[in-house]
Picture 1 (cartoon, rainbow, N blue to C red):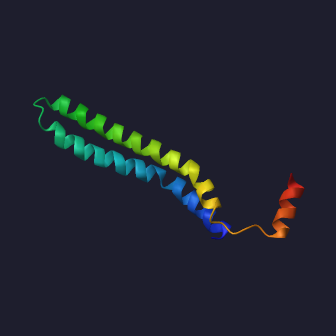
Picture 2 (cartoon, rainbow, N blue to C red; picture 1 turned 135 degrees about the horizontal axis):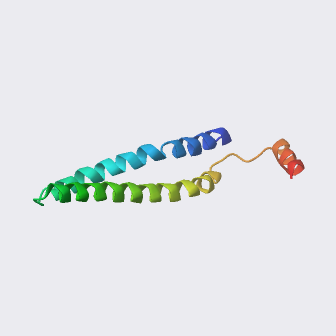
Picture 3 (tube, rainbow, N blue to C red; picture 1 turned 30 degrees about the vertical axis):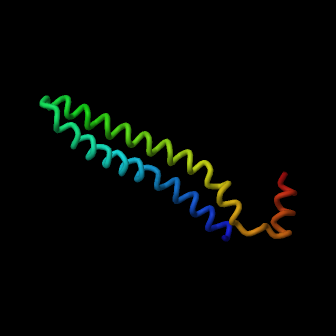
Length: 94
């Protein structure tokens, strides 16, 4: 895999983070709203739905960020080896 493609995957993964968190909180809201229907008090229904949305969004965000921190290491096994020119440039920079 070319290096530019690996970098593109990492950047696009981080840019997808808010969309993933929003989607997870939306699904959590739907599921918890279905469960909250069994309560008679409207404020309790809203609280249960809001807590469900926040919890699912937070869990999805935590899992995604932990995964995205490991992506560069996972992709490094599939990237093309550096050329001799690149190795010399990197060594001179350090």
